[in-house]
Length: 330
Image (cartoon, rainbow, N blue to C red; front, side, top):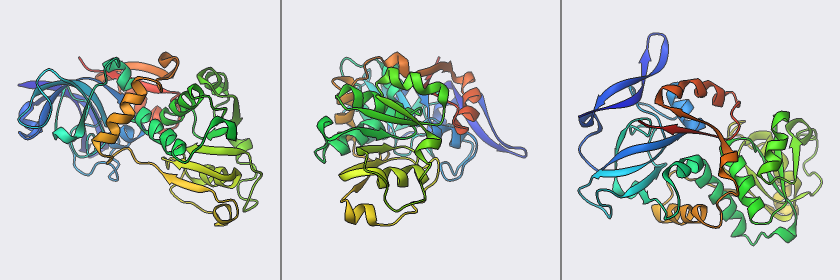
């Protein structure tokens, strides 16, 4: 049986991604076969589609680290034919063919049931970005953080993780300070719930000048890394925590230990890829219920079909995407 999928191939002129016909046998015979109905575009998908060997080592390959669809065939595990499931993380879209194909075949332990009340399309408006945002917020709440302690900083706020973090924190009653390099996005971030929006330049103005900066934020969600993260850590209030989940700016952390030993701040690492499915399921349930952003449509940048994905790949690599791109499969 044939199906449509985006396939990234290595050519003499570099890497090219195009819509092709594939066979189910290309996916192997082990695991659960899922008919994909929706996916989304993430920074990691753009890296895979442009041949980044740190993400995908084997080509040709179908990107797409997110997928939601219906079980078509299963030989083991807790799922039955007809169940609607979500797959995010693990090796999906990296070296295992991903959500930019009409079918995926994955281990049962990579799947979580779609929570009751959450539409499949809405699950992909959230996607890995929403799951990661929820994990960041949860890690801060686990330290005892509450709205009375002061504002929470969100860096990279116009991206998927950042924008959803803003929306979740605002819904939970926090005052949110969002950092953005896009002046045209300030009003949009306020519509998501940000109390104030800081320009990237003003936020980084004193980034390397001192080992400690003025105490301003009770907590932080950092989606960028590099100078953004170091500035956030230097600016946390005594006992504050920063949840770190990104490295788009840099993976390096160049600073002293003074914020950690003089102010007792904490750096919390957040991973959504290899997380046990039981925890993913808990986060998805929160996203489907009390943590659902007040207006999910505000988070959408666009809806495209498979043949429209390439147009957004370069945009997301250049930081030119505000919110989430949803991918509809025919």
